[in-house]
Amino acid sequence: MPITPDQRAEIDALRATPRATLRAVSEGMEAHLYRAHEVLDHGFIRVIDYMGDDAAIVQAARVSYGAGTKHVQNDEGLIRYLMRHWHSTPFEMCEIKLHVKLPIFVARQWIRHRTANVNEYSARYSIMDREFYIPAPEQLAAQSTVNNQGRGAVLEGAEAARVLEILKSDASRSYDHYEAMLSQDGQQGLARELARMNLPANIYTQWYWKVDLHNLFHFLRLRADPHAQYEIRVYAEAIAKVVADWLPIAFGAFEDYRMGGVTLSRKAIDVLKRRLAGEVVTQEHSGMSKGEWREFEGIWAESGAAKP
Ligand SMILES: Cc1cc2nc3c(=O)[nH]c(=O)nc-3n(C[C@H](O)[C@H](O)[C@H](O)COP(=O)(O)OP(=O)(O)OC[C@H]3O[C@@H](n4cnc5c(N)ncnc54)[C@H](O)[C@@H]3O)c2cc1C
Image 1 (cartoon, protein in one colour):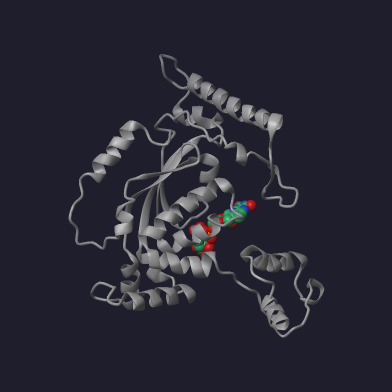
Image 2 (tube, rainbow, N blue to C red):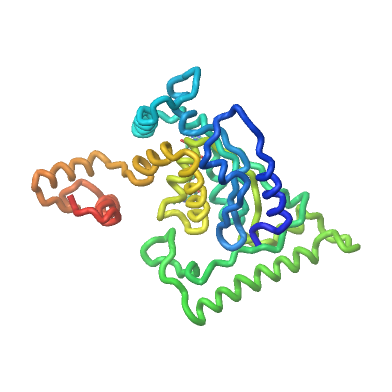
């Protein structure tokens, strides 16, 4: 269960006591504050706090004395200019603090993003909950035969049932042993910091994660991408939806120039120019490796656009 009835009541109580403030407020974000957005089978993300709105980016870029937004169109133009030209520091003026509940193997990928502040639930101090990520049937997939870092065909029938049974019974047995080892119920047992070591990587952990918008966009660019592992991607997608409500202009620019845009190499631009001039260019005459060429051709295939 992602949120218990007690936790839900705490969230409702927090939302029932608004206070007036002089700080910049994003109406879109206020609707998200404290609320849990469920992710995977037991996980969630929820916004604990945030700083800034679209106007704060403009305000910082202009080093202004007052509010940023006087002419929304000018502000949008400026934010899009900043994004286009990698003028990143104004985006660092906005921050978000999230409470995230996630499987440990997802946390291992997530923690590689070093430009954030993290405080994780202590399994030295507290006993871990019996909550494990068990993939939904459509996510139980075999190793991809073309991509060493990805999934292939979805498992079906007896094979799906077999691996599901292994996942469930391993999780259950490990947790039973964890409880059996803990110093509790009158037995000497093991300290929490030791008893946890045989718990599997699909057990859930929780943390507070605070990051500025520039580095959050970097995280989303990598982890909301179709090439990212599904289990971290769904968290990134949930966060992206929140950011779209928080900072609609900045998020729109991010979608245009980062998520929806591509970086082309010098060789790729040369091929484009030659093709636009009517030349038929193949990989052999492009100067690109087979891998580069595949990715280059993939751009037009993925966007559904006609080949240039
Ligand atoms: C699809 C995918 C596959 C991956 N596969 C692997 C893998 O097989 N093995 C593996 O180990 N990792 C892997 N990673 C993790 C990846 O290498 C990065 O560690 C991760 O994406 C975090 O990126 P980052 O370092 O840019 O982010 P952050 O740590 O948030 O850093 C943001 C930026 O700050 C700068 N920065 C931060 N810290 C430093 C520093 N100490 N020195 C210099 N500059 C710094 C860099 O410019 C960096 O890009 C993978 C990531 C993805 C998205």
